[in-house]
Length: 115
Length: 118
Image 1 (cartoon, helix red, strand yellow):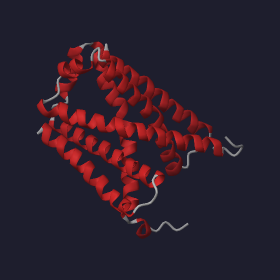
Image 2 (cartoon, rainbow over the protein chains, first blue to last red):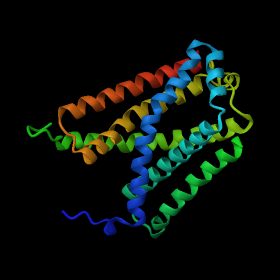
Image 3 (cartoon, chains in turn purple, cyan):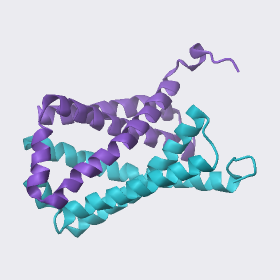
Image 4 (cartoon, rainbow over the protein chains, first blue to last red):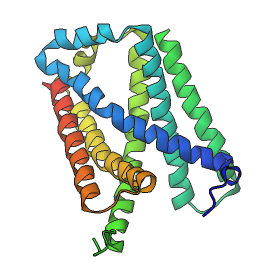
């Protein structure tokens, strides 16, 4: 089958790419997240020490990216659930823009709160 | 599984349903998690603040346990689709790998819930 990129270059395809990439990256991040929280098993100081390490600007940037990925995967997933389970309505066309907007807003709110 | 290494229709339906059901649970969990994160970081994170909220709090422990259970179902099925479609990986080895991911996520996740509860 011919793999024609032009045929794929539309918003719904990019929504699929974002959903898949964010899902894979979040799955890779989860063990690290669970490990970090597990530091509390060794006492409050160990968790505090990890949190102070995470104050570095690059880590904060990575955290913002993770919040954005989580929000994008969630809103993109809600869009898919609506498309699959609800009867078609014309406003469903706007779901993609709404999903992107809400995800960006969540990322921005996180960034503003840590700034 | 069929003799040529493909999933039976019954198994495919089961995975599809589990993926959607866990997604519905996760949607609520992620909204609560995002609101909590954005609220909690406004004055900087500290271990005392996090543990002050979660230690001995059965409601948070129940919420995060549900969150972990839904993730342990949802993420491995998503990874399975990704690995199968991207790398053409199928058969028993994929099933074993995905099951290992599910068990690891569940084990580490519940350990993390316990860590901030006790």
